[in-house]
Image 1 (cartoon, one colour):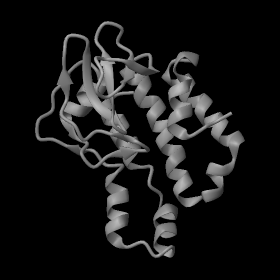
Image 2 (cartoon, rainbow, N blue to C red):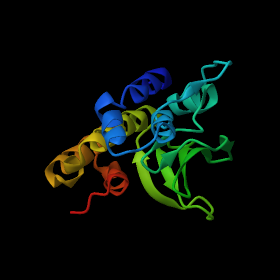
Image 3 (cartoon, one colour):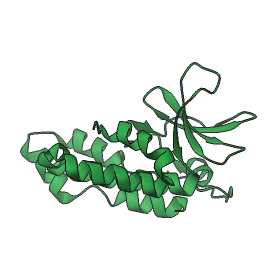
Image 4 (cartoon, rainbow, N blue to C red):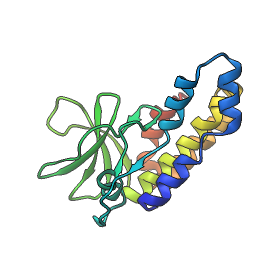
Amino acid sequence: MEAREFVNLLKSIPSNEAINSYRSRGLDDDFIKEYLNSFNFQELDKSKNYGDPILDLVNNYDGSTVAIGMITFDIELEEDNDYYIFGRFEADFLAINKNLKIVEMLEYGTNDYVIYQCARNSSSFLNAIIEAAGYMGKCASDSNLRKDKNILSLVVERCGDLAGGDDYIDFYKMMLGFDE
């Protein structure tokens, strides 16, 4: 998946059903606006191809309001000899391993300790994350959906497949709160 496709798909996730559900629960317009902004990357004036979907995403879009579960894009891209650090999962970092091209979650405060391998490459990561975001978006309007372990198991498996296979499924189990 390319950056522009990811941005457009993410923006389409919030449903009128979810918004109406929030309104019926008495949540105000500021909350709803924040909810909608959490799915919305803002295109920057400049647009350049960096040859990698995640690098294209974080260099060509402002993701400071975006939150996909615990994933945020509110940091500046950092680069060292081994990684491009592009986002966070809670306090930990999401990064592209320059040598292997895989996406990894690095523990905050360590010298590149890998907690999880997240995807075989940037495109696969965006594919898996959009799948997870779609599921979480549906959960916003259907509280019973999250309680259905069979559906959650299928979503986790699908995310793992999109990410590149079994090597990556543990990240999505953790991200989506699946405990066997």
